[in-house]
Amino acid sequence: MFDGTLKKALAVDLEQSPYLNVFSDSKVRHTLALMGKPEDERVTVETAREICQRNSVKALLAGSIANLGTQYVITLDAINAATGDSLAQVQGQADSKEQVLKTLDTATSQLREKLGESLGSIQKFDKPLEEATTSSLEALKSFTSGDVKHGTGADFEAIPFYKHAIELDPNFAMAYARLGAIYSNLNQMDVSEQYRKKAFDLKDRASERERLYITSHYYADNGELDKGNEAYELYKQTYPRDVTPYVNLAATYIFQLGEFDKGLADATQAIQVDPDEVRGYYLSALAYLGLNRVDEAKAVLNAGLKRNPNFVILHDQLAIVALAQGDTAAMEKEEALLRDQPDLAMGVNNRHGDIAASHGQLQKARDFYQKMGQTAQQLQLKGQQAQSLTSEAWALAVFGYPKQAIQSEDAALALSQDYFTKLFAAGNLAFAGENAKALELASEVARERPNDTVVQMAFVPSIQAAVAINNGDGKKAIALLQPAVPYDKAFLGSLYIRGLAYLKTGQGDAAAQEFQKMLGLRNYAPAEPLMSMAHLGLGRAYALSGDKAKSRAAYQDFFALWNNADPDIPLLKQAKSEYAKLQ
Image (cartoon, rainbow, N blue to C red; front, side):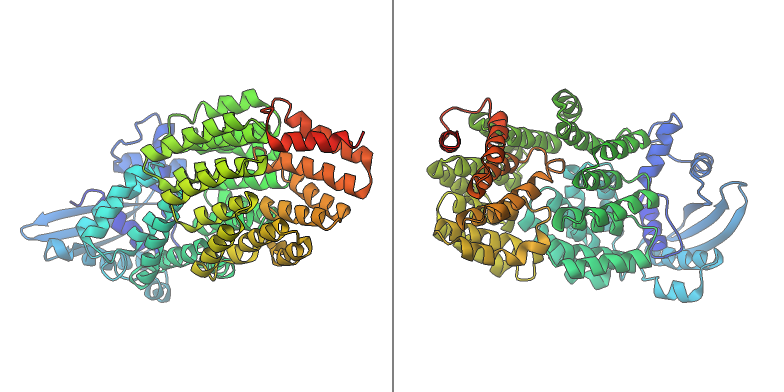
């Protein structure tokens, strides 16, 4: 019962302190591997001292628990890692198993004081485990097992442990928070939201660090970017040695705001704070790609793999870098290292579906999207399964097959009604000319997520603008898209629709600027099918402006990408007809 559990409890207690930095289990495993030992080897005091010395860790905390009849004696000994001398020692006695966590709390507070932390700091950042994390030893044990799996990237295997922890303690805030994060990563947005909301409701039953974790995730994942960023900044200030706020701020700047320079700054700080955390490298590479600094993206990914060859996700990012550089052989070499993990294999199939769609190879694209959907079905991930269908529906709608697009979208919505699926369905249905259903879905999401900045300012206006274009009102579409301007630096959908709106109003030069902005992101999203649409849009924009030479060149770029396209695609026939008129 106590094995591993008290270690987790001690870590939670110590991590409340802004002055102490706990060396993580993942770093211990990595160091053991460097020492030529099995990663799951039991760590003795002698081994722990060597781990400390290798990583410049100043102190080792050795704990013991002894049974005296019905009582338990807990001892904590802080050891100088360099000399082996005792820095401080405390002891406490629990009258029963149920009192062990309370006794450990008291002993940890005494130890923090002996190690030099001020009484004021301890009083401020020292919420008892029974009031914060959990009062249940059994729940903490299950949570600890979940964290062991989660820490190695085995999220599927972690889920049952977190769920069992909640069964044992329905008020276990961090267990709900962990499940919220995992289901979000798996694109199960509705499930994720339920767990995040429950964690937020219970945040006062968490330590200060856990409360900041829960609050910042809740606001950011809820789309409330200002509140989320504010919470992450407070998190950084309070716990500057915790990597979490750095990586999550970086993700917000990169994915949602397209502010790659700010994202790079936080991602770089994340690497400095914790060089053994994979997300710092991953996000730095994404930011470099957004800034069109491809060689630096590749360098930071290789640095991460040199630090830890087990950072498998970085091979996925190296595949994207290789694609941006036009090296398909290198891309496939990196992808070969991903196919053993079903979640990563899904991403590979999705990428190859996008690549095929980018080249007008519709049937090939559909085959890859269906492979992704089959894996998602096997893993019971309905959100991912729906995504495979929305990707297929987009290609069908844009390429000129509206009926088939609507069928695919109906199938996606039958699988999932999460806001993400509904938003993409609405956009695809607008491209397919199903205006009423597109507006209905967009309105539903707008009502469901009233405080989601990007939904309200970019996604929903883009769908409404696409419908306005369908109705022949390009001027209205341009006005509808005005709120999206601060948020569409990396949102290709609104850039593309704005370009179409300018074409509809006869503003060729303005349309060309939007399509050029899209092409400026080709290193960031080299597999994105909209990139080939940007070339076609440029051809139409330059023709509208009367620049036939530039128009012909843009059409030729499009035809080069679609050199091996399926020959009967209506969009391709239309493009060839337009090009013939330029001769």
